Each structure stands twice: as structure tokens, then as C-alpha cells.
Length: 273
Image (cartoon, rainbow, N blue to C red):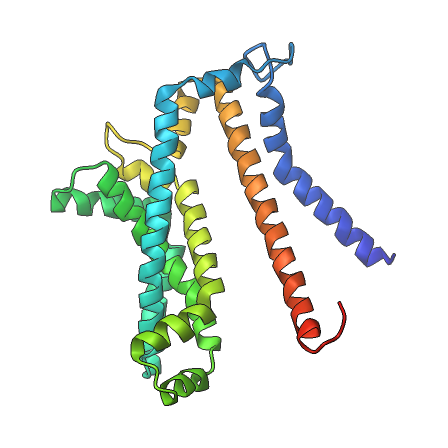
């Protein structure tokens, strides 16, 4: 192994250690019977039991999942329509302008976006709560969906659409049987990316939540400000483990699909697997 490769691996190990050390520290003390994060006194599952018996927290988790799923689905649908519309624009200057406006929303600070939504909802008379949070999450997820779908759409050869039309396909058939199947990987990527952003968002949600409605990120922040409670550690540990399981499951399914695709041509040609 060369010195360059060895230094690169050591660097990666240090980076990952710095990233995951706080998470493992939090997980370790979620089993502490002492009730603090200074000295580990003994193993206990008390804090996990407290999480599962906290009715309010369970409702907040459900609220968070409903908001994330609804906003991701709606944002992905709008992103598909937006990507199709942008792709059909022939004037390069207009297309670049629209793409720039789309990208500005992605790089804008969450505090600015959250404050803007708060002012907008106040002026429009929209009560802060479920509706305001849902609209906000859809709004900041749409640019992400467009950015994920548009490159895949631009990779599609125009001859596919022309061939479908020559064979008598209607506009609806071209959309549902040619375009959508081709960009389906990007659609799924856009959905999961929007879902991740929605679940993780704190700054925008903090501005637009009402007194009777909140999400998990805002609730964890509120509890952390009130003082150290290891139930937060337990909840964070559960979220981390579930997320890790989903990522690993997605990786295994994707790997299995790639293997099957790699074997398909051989089987079709009569070559034994």
C-alpha cells in the first residue's frame, strides 16, 4: 500500500470518528441509570420505556411522519411537472433564469426562508399549525425534487418520444409509458431526498409551528433547552437505528436489483448463469 493511499484511509477514519463519536456518546448514555451524561452508573432501559409511554411524544412522531410523507409526495409530483416544463423551454436564457431561481431557494439560509413564510402566513391569515408546516415543507422540497429529476430527464433521447408518437401513442401514453418509467429512478431519489429534508428540518418548522402543533425536531430542541433528559438520548438512538436500518435495507435491495439486471442479458442470450 502506497503512502498516499494509507494517508487517505487514515484521514477518512479520523473524519468518520469525529462525525460518529458524538452519536455513539449519546447512545451510550441513553442506557445510563444515573440520569446524567457525566458518569455511567449502570445499565437501564428506563429511558426507552419513558419514550414509549409518552403519549404526547408518540403523537408528535406521527405528526412528523405525516408531514414528511405528504409534503414529499406533493413536492415530488410538483417537481415532475416543473422538470417537464423546464425541459421543454427552448430559450436558453429563460431556462437558466428559472434554474437559477430554483437553486437560490436551495442555498438560501433556512432562517430567512422560515421568517419569510411566517410573514407570508401572517399576512395571508393562515393559522400556524398543520397547514402552515405542510405548505412550508412542500415549498422547500420542490426545488430539491426539480434538481433531482431534471438531469435524468435531460439524459433521455428525444428519439424515444418520437418513436412512441410514430407508433400512435397519445401524449398521455408518452408521459406514462415512456417518460415516467425512464425518469422513475430520479423520482424515487427526489422523494426520499425530500423526505429526508422534511424529517431533518428544524429552522423553517420552528418559525411556522403553532402553539398546539409541533414536529419532532422542534420538540427535541424544546426539551433539550429545559434540561438534560436521557429520554432525548433514547429517542435519538431509536431514530438513528431506524434510519440506519432503512439505509442498509435500501442498499441491499439496490444491490440485489443490480445483480439481477446483470444476469438478465446472459439468460436472454441463452448463456447459463
